[in-house]
Length: 308
Image (tube, rainbow, N blue to C red):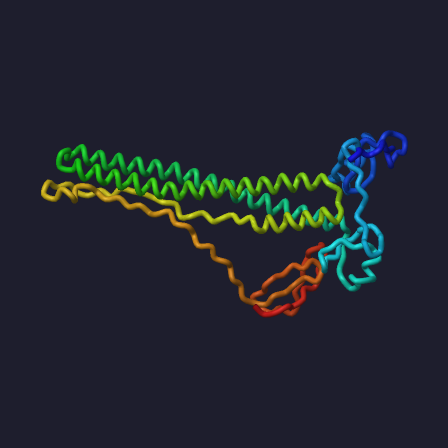
């Protein structure tokens, strides 16, 4: 596709419009861009080089042939101003750019939270592996220390026990390493989603973007960060040494197996309410006289749905 034609700054109408504000959809020169970024209301606006801008027309309503400027919160679709009095009469609306910004923010937060959790899991698993390796080596050393005390009497038993420790610890370590591999895969998946999110942020806001953002939201929800298993532990239990009971000379060890933690959903019981503006749902443990939502910075009544 061809690049956008040369534009003049739409603010001073004199200098070349080398920068394009994705939020205001206007061309700025370098000086006007600096002034725009200093303003409190537009300090977080995103700019793109006009030379890199791909000209794309705004999506239009197929029924009214008008540009989409609003988002129907009830139906979760972009609409034009004529739709408000038509098929979407009585619904709640918000600005399209605001709705897209909210969706972006939600996706970014979920990705950030899940990648953070995956990173934390990796750190915990790696630390556990180090501690477990040290514990295994300590057990082996303790077994060897006792074997040196009674040489010929326990050589065979010591060899058997060491084999047992290594085999079982290797098996349990394999389980933990599998958890580590899974956690790294979850992190990669989260990073890939984050890259796609950043790439999507560079595109023009339109109906296709809304569909892509919602699709990404579904993928984010499907990205499940597994809970950590109960890590294995190993310790050595010393016993008194006597020549009359050779087998009892070798102190035993205990190895807690690496087992997955069962995922349990938190079940709540009470009264379900839903905000008629943002769609947020809450479960209250009792039936209050009135329940409000502060989704837009204003108190909005939440409608009782059912008892759960």
